[in-house]
Image 1 (cartoon, rainbow, N blue to C red):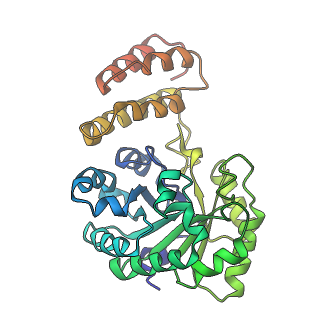
Image 2: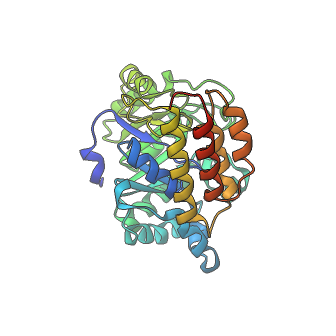
Length: 322
């Protein structure tokens, strides 16, 4: 098992979840500056698409990263071991610290290719893909998955993955069918740790689902024995999430919003729709006097200059404590 940077991380490991159209290079750079987690993931990227000459250029944008984000893990999805092997070589060449395989995404278009959560129904193929990623990249290979597909089959599914000795497995404590419609079952993360231990495996187990903040993450790690916790939605509007002792004002938050927007435009403006930033506007701008009106104005913007002008005007005229 190639351990790499994973062996140097503190326990419990605090990780930021990969989220499509959220954890792009601009957002990760902001997070790394204001509250860096122990490890960061890219958005998930199609290994099959990266092997397509037409698609590669566009998809490589999703694999951009900065040195300040390290350790940084490339998350890929594929139902094709041969393509995962080839893309493993690419990920190595690009200088990533690790490679993570998505085996939990419920998107139907991804499942049709045999990837994402569909691999839970095909453990033989899942194992082939882990082997291909390890052989192709030579990097520490991890997996992100769920308790099962239509039903919870953790005790059958987890040993299949552990047999291939990935360095880490992150388990979203719901099935694919449940999506995020039911509370995450953290007792099953405890069961996953017990299963890992009973098999004498050295693979790290990270839990994921409904984690409110860092204090909650540490409590869940203690309760379950997990080696780490992955937080996702809790990061919205709070780039200080992983530095919970830092107090910040409305002015601080709006300043980071402007900084984030400028960075998005600088790094991704030619490649991605500005509309992607608007989900962040909703998250940054809430919980203070005038937030609704400010948010409505920001949702009409088309570039970073307009955003900065609106925020500057709001702060100059507002009575809120800045």
